[in-house]
Length: 396
Image (cartoon, one colour):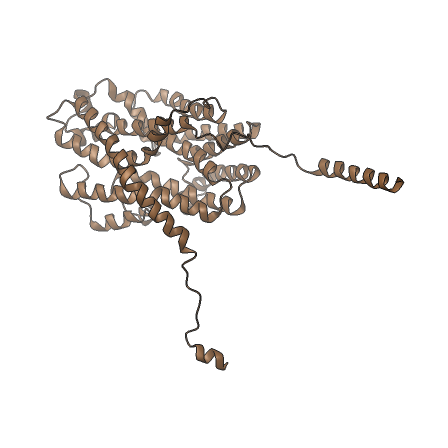
């Protein structure tokens, strides 16, 4: 009896010692995986609409003349400056993408992550290229008629590193997405944990600053400095949502916010439209607002928003983004001088939303299922290796 008590005491002491030596565990919120996050879907759709309205109403003055055939002062004299902020919808896309990719990849194998990203991007992208090519080569558009080599290169989604222009200018956002998937796949391969994602955010932030400063074109192309802060902040927001807010996560978000503003206000950067907009002082507020909107979702303030219509709207985001530019700008180019501008914008945008629903429902979804099924079965369809000369093998 005495020996049993001694063994129990030793076991209890050992358990306490092991518990004290073990690192503290971060416990996920139980509802982190069950929520659909309809608010995030709705925010994604609003970002797509913002980009659409930017292309119709808020583009640079010279672009408005090329598309509409007359200056914006005679088209949208008061609304032009407001809808110029719609370009920030792309940055909101990247912010949401960092959140969503981190969420969807958690607990998945690298193979599942690869299949999910391919089926998410390529089917709709191929459909959009076919539609855009039909429009560009069949009617008079402000996009001209590019060399067929451009079309073939665009099907790979690698036109940026190939040095080929995009068939549709909006395709430029797909390269930062691809680079994000490629680099994040390393973390997925190692296994997603709180510490590894935080480490990945820190390394990417440092590379974002050092790659351009060190004049390293290849690394700069991979890390995408102007887009990286949004992806990084999105991942930090997801960690807040899945676990809990922490000073290190707020530090990552704060650093990403500062870098985003730096690149946004850089007169020689991608967003050089800030140099001509008289409202460029409001850009700081606009970027802050989109960070705060995602922060509200990460902190769980939107959990009660469960309207299914927002989820449906979220599925239309990618088709609407890919299809709107060539079709919409061609409509404005051909009918901008014959139809009231606001009527044309309203009818075209409504038609694009309906078209996006039909394409997503009857083309993208079935094609994505076929592609996903093919990729999932690919590993099992590989033939077993057979010797070319079995009789020689037997003799040896």
